[in-house]
Amino acid sequence: MKNQCPALSENNPALSQPEFFSAELLRQATTTTCKTPAGESADTAAVKESVITPPNPPRLAYHNQENDIRLYHGDCLDLLDAIAAQYPDGCFDMVFADPPYFLSNNGSTCKGGQRVSVNKGQWDKSRGLRADFKFTRAWLRRVKRALNPGGTIWVSGTQHSIHVVGFVLQSLKFRILNDITWEKMNPPPNLACRQFTHSTETLIWAARDEGTDHIFNYDLMRRINRGAQMQSVWRMNAPTPDEKVFGEHPTQKPVALITRCLLAATCEGEWVFDPFLGSGTTAIACQRNRRRFVGIDLSGSYLDIAAARIRAESGQGVDLFETGLENQLPADSSSHNRLARNFKPETFTFPGIS
Ligand SMILES: C[S@@+](CC[C@H](N)C(=O)[O-])C[C@H]1O[C@@H](n2cnc3c(N)ncnc32)[C@H](O)[C@@H]1O
Image (cartoon, rainbow, N blue to C red; front, side, top):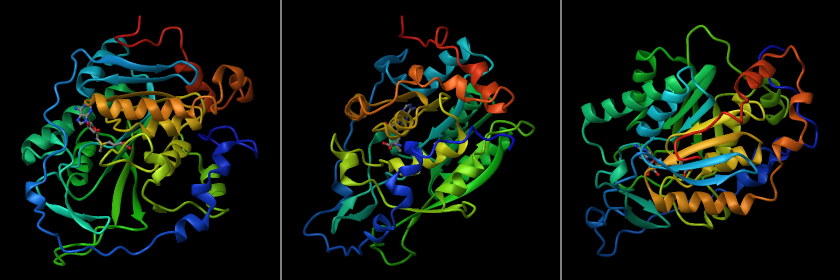
């Protein structure tokens, strides 16, 4: 079938991911109740990170050559400008972006039965609708330039951010393919009891342009969904404790969620970019599924978590250059054309790599 990657072998790790098949995991959800705060005011809870001054130009903070994973420290706008200077026609096949949701505005939520501040860090503070809109447009405009023709982007968000993202995507002439609802299995209860419990996040999936073909691994998605067409509501747990052993990121995504996006929209060996890396979840999904990766974050401490997670995975990964990857691809498949066009490791360099 057109615009799908070559079929995976039966023993491919992508098909045995427990997150996809285990009803057990889905049953693990329990109901949480929240105690009334004991003298703790969420409003006074400190914002965890002070204002971050990232290096400019962005600095290569970590490079895993075995799996071709590069992590940058800096502002994604600066890195995307540097990439555009080197690759004016784009170089990434997929972008996964989990941008600030702009919800760190002194509200409170319930975590582990306690009322806690929703403040995540300065990077998540809203600077008003106009400034948030300008930032969203600035990074999405640059991401569009960095995508290959036929490339796609996933952007996550909640009501605080996703409507602006959707508007900007349309105004920049991306083609929206789906809005995925991630239904959380065990959402925190609503404390004010004045609204429904927030139990979903949205992921918008969009192609770079109106007129180009994109990859959608339809057959693989159907197999993962036990033979039925994959629908746009995905029920998944929040990250498990073993995904957080190297440190806590306040808005960490589950590996299973990003893995599904990756498997749907890319082929092995392709290049993925994450402008808001956080604890490196996209990098881990790429490492496990043999995609090459570039990511960036403002915060050095989040990058430390990401690098530790990647190091821990290393050794369990597969060396792309030993898989005979190119030989597995049929000569006339569009995915092969995509790979051949972009697979230039000898010339693919970024600022900071000598
Ligand atoms: C929502 S979190 C991403 C979490 C990530 N998906 C994970 O699973 O850990 C957003 C991240 O973007 C970073 N960030 C915010 N603005 C940025 C910018 N202009 N450039 C690079 N990183 C930025 C923040 O430091 C934060 O770690």
